[in-house]
Length: 180
Image 1 (tube, rainbow, N blue to C red):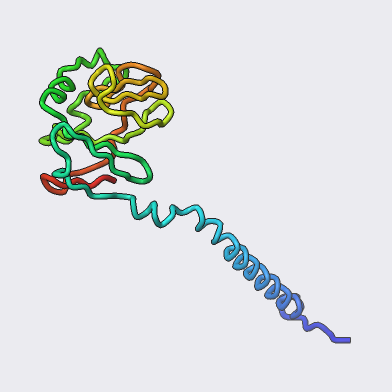
Image 2 (cartoon, helix red, strand yellow):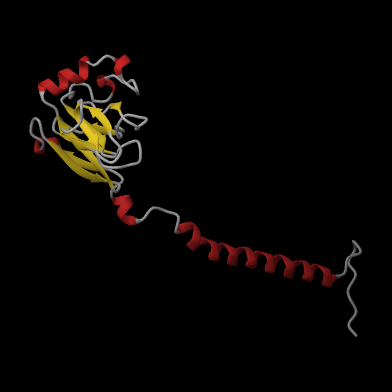
């Protein structure tokens, strides 16, 4: 039978070896847990195709006056509209008191580029895609539930609670924007 060695502080030598084994086993368990958890945590990151669309650039010269182009950003449609002088005048002259979700046209466009309107193309009611030119106010109309938007993308009539969303965007030059 082996005798345990007693140190000056009264503890046996086997106890310190046992403590080391417990600490080493605990560290190995934490490492194994981290290795098992990493794939789960990493799966919560956005997919590579979504990251690639985190921001996009668009050449505004592709849009002619009175025309709207739909581009895809983060899997959502974005309406880029070059408004006519008449559409712009209607948007600017609409009193805020006539709006369900009051927001001035100047707050929805970039200064110096008020003829261009950039909005997400999803109805704020249930996410349907509105069509342009068929609404009561010269703007978009959501045929699914009857929401009417004006030429600035502001809700005027119907069940939608808010204006079409203006995404974060900036002008890189006079003719190029970056969305996102």
